[in-house]
Length: 507
Image (tube, rainbow, N blue to C red; front, side, top):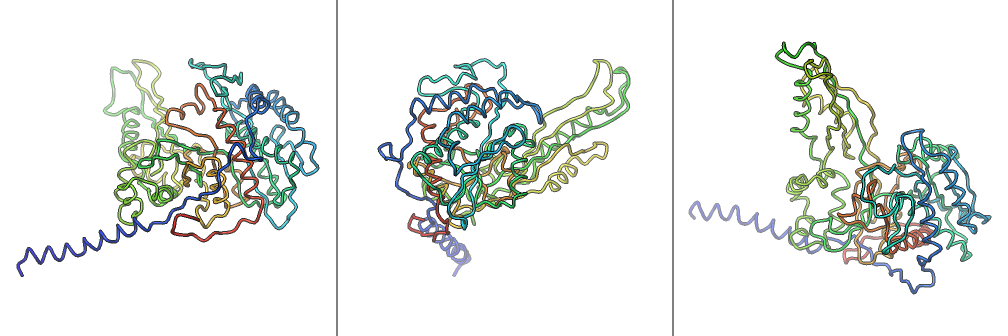
């Protein structure tokens, strides 16, 4: 046999085996999706978006519960909002099953007593505060009006985060009106300063529960949403449930040099040295960690619902992870899921046009991947800058959140997934990573099952509404928000057990 056929045999046989393995895995890859009976408007336990319920949401928006910085907010508005909540839900607040505490002067903690003490409590969280409204033009309705028009409720807080507060309370009020006595105890925790890290609100709630020895089955807070058109290869809506949050590390870089007159410059300047350091950081990003964290689970949970080429790749990440790592870095949004990001957010130097600056200072903000440590990020910065004249100081940091379980091994996750797909039966559900941070950082010691999800639909054009102009929620989405929380209360009001993972598309 000549050399060429021998080479073909040696290469061809392994290649064909590889193809067979890829095809078999693609065809047999299990589905992670559930198919529960959908929630219909004709159901007796459906919560319609009546005028009264919409007016209550609109009323909540009118309170200017703005957080400006830690310890500085709008206490009078918070007290008015708390009183409004008390007046708006009379059944809840008069029920012998419900206790309400004001924590840290302006945060709320509800406890709904369950009948079965063998079931660990659940905790639903949201927050009462909002970010300020800038002078940026373009609002179609006054930002604190709660105006209802064209099928939307407008105003600051409609999607961050008063729709979750009011949706949870509406669901609980509806539940109690129907004479329901829960088996599982349920906490509702509403911090008042989440937008400025929650040090005086959720942190106090978390400490209070820890002091009482409370352990909960799960925590569900605000977070990722039902998306459309954001996941390549998937035609359906995708509800992303945050199972982790990136940490953060803010670093101050500074260089001090001899100043002087601009007419007699030295060979190097503080500005030049610091500019080179910053350029080195941008040219040498933190390592690509795609595939080592929850971002891998995101793709695998959607694999069976993808177009053919995408399905082949995501069903065989054992082979195609290097390809995915390259693809995911091509856009800013997907790159942020793949690594610890580096953003130079401030650069200050100079005092006069003809004076050589004696000092240059820059601020670098990292969002830390769940599989990265703060020290590893800092070590990378120092190594890449490679200049002892650049002083590197940590301004503040937060380690990444622990990764919560998802899929068949997590009964709490499955209860959330089932509740989503009852309300959005045309959607898929997958775990993902929160790039921002929530109040859940203050509940890490209560449970290992912490999830972040907001039950409303967001397309690419809607993302700018978070903390931006024309924040609004559709009436249909608010109706689904109330019903999501109602069904979640039903679905967790029983023992949560691990379910066998079938390969025929069902869980």
